Length: 397
Image (cartoon, rainbow, N blue to C red; front, side, top):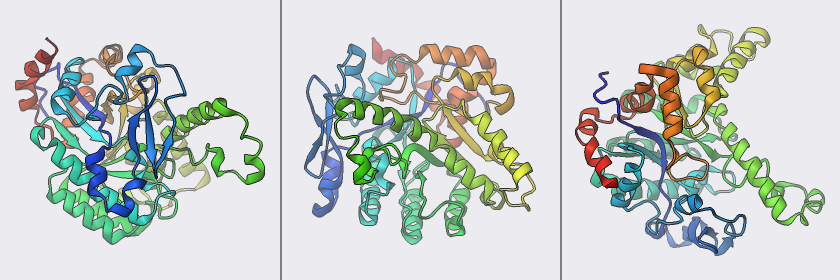
């Protein structure tokens, strides 16, 4: 790989929200199940599902920076490409890998199989058509349902044939985990097409809504102890959701390394997205200890768990000094930068400090993290991005 412009930035974690156009693509009896952002109070957005409003706009008072985030100031919800590129220009971002918003929870246990497969198909058509006019700059991830393996393979084949650069799978599917060999045809399909799999946090059974943290999943007796906590309960649940949801990114690593999937499929590549990666060093050494001391891995695997991950796995980094401190152990070849546009927990439009920290820590290797690794994985044309870099940065003037 040749680095053609050190100033290039590819965000491996960006988002688009689900809008009325997407909802209209669903069969009428499923439309209300799709969560839709709607205007709330104080400039914030609520979400509406099944005709009910989830009142997020009363949770906090918005700062001026907050008002720019979470599509609060964008009526198009991320689908106006001119506006999107102007936002990218504020940080000099040349390209994005794009994931859903509330739709990350399409594979959660609260969804029906019919909804998950139908929503995934409609979403894939929606993002393919939305971003096709600027396909060299935007790479939306195809959403792949996992309940029925024949449907999984059919949607995966359709998306590969349509030119998607990556396939997005839920992090946690406890009723049909990724260690099962029924997924082998999917892994082979991804290998043959040289398409990476992406596991985005807050998806699957650890989804938005906090399967672990939400008091709504408690017994009636225990729920009765929580009902009078009001906004404090909501705030606490949100905090737990954020931490537990991000921890879900560890699950695919454990599933794929411990079960022999990566041994059987040595060319399969996968990415854990939007969890930063300060935890990665601990996970790698913990897996190796389990393999060595407690025999929790298959005894016939020739490599250490950490070796499988470092050969085939990737993680995103947004603003994580712990990850940079651990780079002697994990290396940086497995890292992709992403600013999580335009989420509250991301760094847009103030990413420069974290970008500078990556450059200061990694030196020349920072180029791989900031654009090179993403270009290799997702197929971005660096020559095109370099030739049009000034075009992007000029949008701020």
